[in-house]
Image (cartoon, rainbow, N blue to C red; front, side):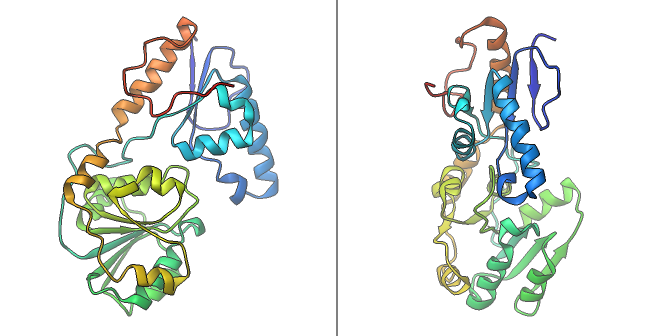
Length: 277
């Protein structure tokens, strides 16, 4: 082969061609068992050593990667992912008053979000849509709001749920990229997230960022409905493109066959160039 693109770990053994690796997150450092984290750390260090370039899906991931292995500093650049399963042209503004929550993983902190909603009972919330949420979330909200609970939905069904919701709420601070935020934005939702570096990077002023705290503190910040203008949200969602992500991958792979970084990368495509080592 002329070049090799690695998009998920582990890195195959025996790759000798120039190598571009996509790095999604380093959350496993905090969430995997000691044995699992040790293996992933070994594989990532090997990947950093062998890769000619490392394409990080967020500046947050790039910072974590360089902190993990300083050899990445001269190889790591940033290009954000596209909007998950949400196709172009899906943005749809509505006023259903429905709040959508997704996932049962602890790091998504949906239990905190549910407790905050139940305590505050914001008047703008007319109902809750939950996809794959925990039993605790369901028990907290079922007798407070009109709720719809879903499990194992198809991509088509998931898209329809995003488009039915007016709001998307997720308070997790340990995402690698925060793809659900971008999916929700791209479908037209008002996004509510905890104010932290990744949310500021990928959501920024296109959503409501609340200060971290307990259920009472978060609930108090949810008494007023998010009201980010539709044009601002739609324009922000356009920044995330699978086409552009593919162009960057292609340009880097071409560059690897031509030696030092050249003008093959489309102007304005890269979010961040690699740093001096």
